[in-house]
Image 1 (cartoon, rainbow, N blue to C red):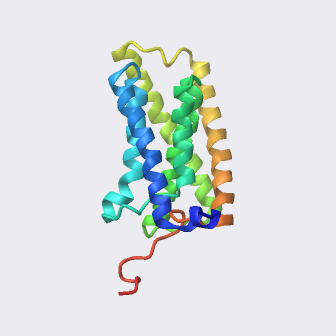
Image 2 (cartoon, rainbow, N blue to C red; image 1 turned 180 degrees about the vertical axis):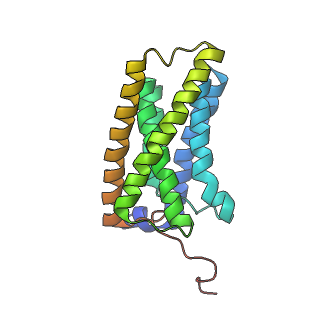
Image 3 (cartoon, rainbow, N blue to C red; image 1 turned 45 degrees about the vertical axis):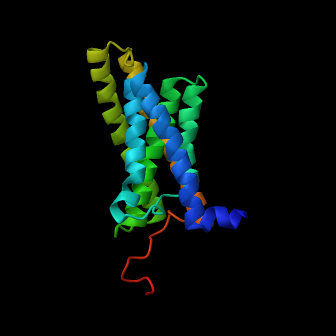
Length: 195
C-alpha cells in the first residue's frame, strides 16, 4: 500500500479509522467499568461524534481522515501508559473539536475557509474545555474525584488547551491543504454521483 493509497482511498481510510475508534471505544468502556468514569465517558463521546457521518449516511466509509482519529487514539494510549490525565485531555479535547469542524466541512453543506476553520476549531476547543471543566466539577462533587484543585490551575487549563488547539489546528490545516485526504473534503452527494 502506497502513501497515496493510505491518504486517498476511502476503504483504507475507513478500515484504519474504525480500528482506531475501536481502540478508543475499548478504553472508554474500560474506564467506565474501572476507576476513571469521566474519562471513559469522554472517550465514548469522541467515538460517537466520529461515528456520526457513517451512521447518518449509512455508509461505513463515511469517516474523517484516519490521521485525525490517530491523534485521539494517541491520547488514549498516552493515558494508558501513564501520561497525566490533564495532558491527554488537552490533546483529546482539541482533537474532538477538529473532528467536529472537519465533519461539518466534509459531510454537510457548510463551507469554511481553511484559516477560519482553524479559528473555529480553536473556539470549539475552548467551548469543549468549558464543558470538560463543568464535568470535572460535578465529578469532584458527586464521585469524590479531585480534578479541580485550584482556580489558577483551572485558568492554565484553558490557556494550554487553547494553545494545543491552535497548534493542532495549524498542523491539520497544513496536512489537509497539502494532501487533501479522504474525509477532509466534501463528499459528493447522492445526486452528483454517477449512476
